[in-house]
Image (cartoon, rainbow, N blue to C red; front, side, top):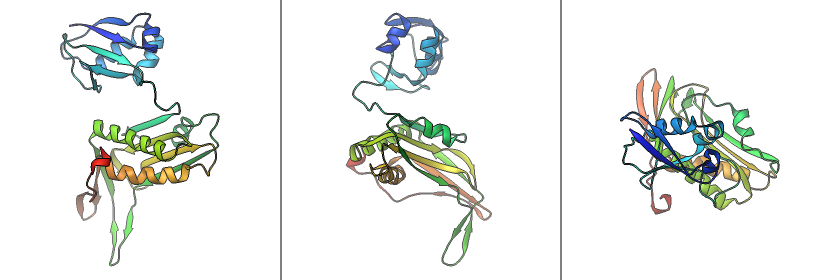
Length: 235
């Protein structure tokens, strides 16, 4: 099928046109469209991975199917957002902490507060210790990514001096001693909210980001569920 893809802002400049024509199989998805548009030139190839996709005036993700009659557009994040780095990752592979924190360092950053949770092998109880062999994490991915961004937005509202922010949630099989979640908040100085923002970030992630873990022990396995119920401020 033949598709016409609209491009806006910097993407339009990179392409030298406000639209490109491509041809794809009938079972193509937005990921296929993204790859095809990226092949036009190197600058588009660098920009398309972080571009936002829309089909028929609605935001979509890479697995969204497309048809020949769809109106497809790619554009960078809309103006008016933060000029500082914001990173949200659902990761099925280990994260390089040095690389991640470097991505939220800008020339005016002098401090980063980083919280990382790990798989605990032994939980000490009042009567006995509970052994954990490994954890399995599962996420409702599109909603989880949106809610991770909401955590960042709330951090920015509460601590306007916080600069770069990263929120990472691991999914899949995690062994004892592996990191499960990470919140990193950068600021110019250590007294400008980075500690408080990181603490808020992990607490808020546990409340509103749809991620669950299955705890596997020598005695069996069980999903671990929380008790927090969303309220209107979580929308």
